Structures are given as structure tokens and as C-alpha cells.
Length: 352
Image 1 (cartoon, rainbow, N blue to C red):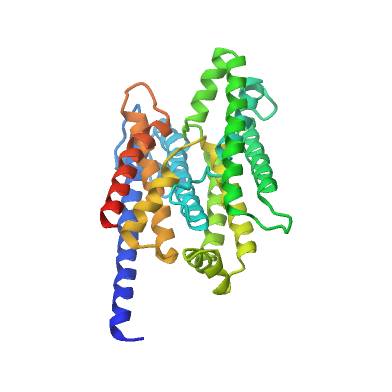
Image 2 (cartoon, one colour):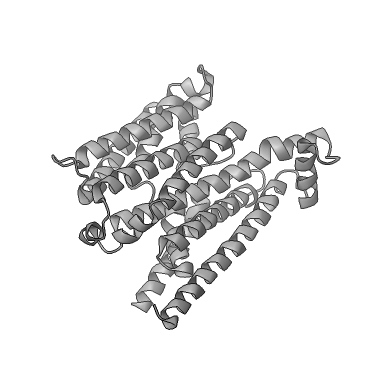
């Protein structure tokens, strides 16, 4: 390989590392700001002192401030970052697997299935005073999302046991529409209080995430990240199409089953914790490709960081735009995501 071919690749790698460092620093600062923002605004110094006091490495602050910072706001902000990173990562993988620029984490009917499970728990009252309390909503959402995924896979599998990509997308749309219809019927037949709770859940929020939820999301996102990073070359090969990927030595069917199943289960777990949050998994991968290019070794880290950064700031905006009232996250991400996506489309069209 000549020097002229090595230098551009080295420059691109350096650029990708630089962008990761910048976004990571912005994410850390944003998390500190996010913990300080609320009904009682706190400085970054107070936030750091409270965390240090809980860890036993400083004088700390008063018990009320420490409780607000460590028990309420910190898990919420970290949860938002993890959910954003996971959704963005899943969106990037699905866009590569399907070759569809409009693919997002909810492509396979995950959001519809999860919403149906949550609505069943909320409208029946199980998610309010049941054996597991509010956790029942998350459990029901996850179970229903997985059930929807199994139906989609059943419809999409050929007699030889292969996943048919076109059929997979259509099955996801069909199951999503069916579950949405059933969900609407349950809401209409339920009482007003149940309808309000359902609306809050389906529009997305990280307000209810506490440390057990953070631990669950962290494990799910970590496992997904490790497995996806181990399939970087596979994802790169899919950019040239199924036949080209097979000619490059990729086990196409095995890779599809592993990656589709993995990102779908990850999405189901994220939706179960935070509800349905749109546009993160759709817009962020496109923005990341503009910064570092399409190679997944450079793309996936910046995708995860940008997704985390976007959702942390979306949560900050949701808490501060309307004093005394909190906006659902999907409203904020749509307000940001739609103009950004239109701009990306126009920019790509201009280059073409």
C-alpha cells in the first residue's frame, strides 16, 4: 500500500477520534448540567460535592440536596444517556442491515408491541397496585415487545429458515399497525385516568428511571455494544449488498439472526424503561456518517455518544421549556429531529 493511500485513512481515523473526544467531553459536561437543572437549580460544584459525599470521599452537602442529586436526578440523566446511546446504536445497525436509510429501532414493530403491553398493564390497573407495582408496566411492555418480535420473525422466515429482509420490514409494519389499533381500542374503552397514563408512557420519559433501571439499561446497552462491535466487518460487508457480503466470507443468515435479534431485544428493553422515543435512532446515524464516514469502526462509537448527548439535552429541554410542567421526550426529539432530518436529506441531495 502506498503512502498516498495510507495518509487519508490515517487522517480520517484521527478525525473520528477527535470527534469522539469532543462529543464525550460535551456529554460529561451536559450530564453535570442536567443533574443541576430542575425545580431547585444546583451548581455543578454542588452536584460534584453531593456525589462525592455519597461516595464518602468528600464533605458532601445536606441530606436533602444529596437525595435530589444522587437518588433522583443522577439516575435520570445517566438513564437518558444510556437510552439515547442504545437507540442510536440500534438504528445504525438496522440501517446497515436493511440498506434502508429510513430504518429506525422500531422498524420491526417493537414500539407497537411494547405500547400494547404497557397499555394492558395500565388500563387493567395492574401497573399501579399490582404485585410488582409500577415495574409491572416495564415487564409487560418488554414481554409484549418480544412477543411481537417473535411473530414478525415467524412471518418473515422462509421455508429454508432464512430471514427475508423485504418480508421482515413489511411484517414489522403490519404488526405495528395491528398492535397500534388494539392499543387505541383499549384506550378508548378505558377511563380517562388510564388514557392519560397511557399517553404519558407512549410519548416517552426518563423521569421514572432509578438506579435499578439504570443497571438494567446499562447491562443491555453494554452487551449490545460488545456484540455489535464484534460484527464491524460484517456490517461493513452489508454495505455492498447480500451477495457481495456472502462473497466476502460473511455468514449472511447467521449474522442477520444474531444482529436482528440483538438490536430488537435491546430496543424492547429500552422501550420498556423509557417508553417510545422517536427520531434518535433515525437521525443520529445519518449525522454521524457526515462526521466520520460509513466505516463502522469509526461510526458506531460516535453514534452512541451523539445519541446519548441528544437525549440528555432533550430531557433537559423537556424539564425546562415549560416551567411547572414536563414535556414528553418524543415531542422534544421530534421538534429537533424533523428539521435536522430534512436538512440532512437536502444536503445529501445537493451532493448527489
